[in-house]
Length: 184
Figure 1 (cartoon, rainbow, N blue to C red):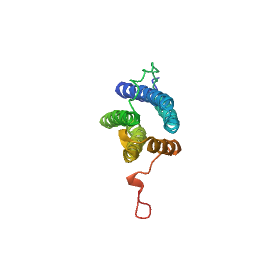
Figure 2 (cartoon, helix red, strand yellow):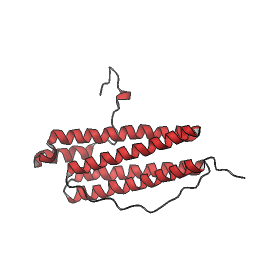
Figure 3 (spheres, rainbow, N blue to C red):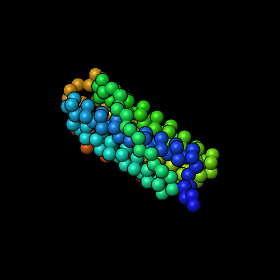
Figure 4 (cartoon, rainbow, N blue to C red):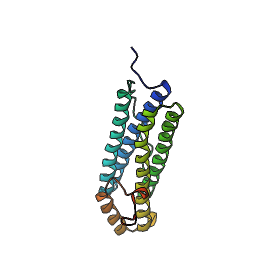
């Protein structure tokens, strides 16, 4: 008896996402190692934690595929692209990476809606919300870096920036969660 409740297209796109999450983990890990080698211990700490979060996302996708009777495909992880040129370039690359991942999530949700696979559509909503948080978090960091002086930041402002990023929560407040008693 066939127990796979995923169409071939859905299973394939979920397996692509599994690979994207694994590659994202590698990118954060590589950029964390770069940041540490440049003396940004706080940024490195933040990126290492985020690398693990991306791996957790990969595991979440893998678990869902198995839960629906499909078979996860574990492939090779690509080597990340070149090291960032500076701390601003690091976060610009991360932001672009998150935008690309958001597009991939939207493709999953769109395909699930097209196929009327409501279980996968519902599963995808967690990732939609997660991507809103991810993009907002990186934008917040980029704004803080801009205030610190961006590529012209002094050593003192970069030191302060690095220490604050190291303490940063892994989640941010979203506009949808604000109200008149608790504005952003």
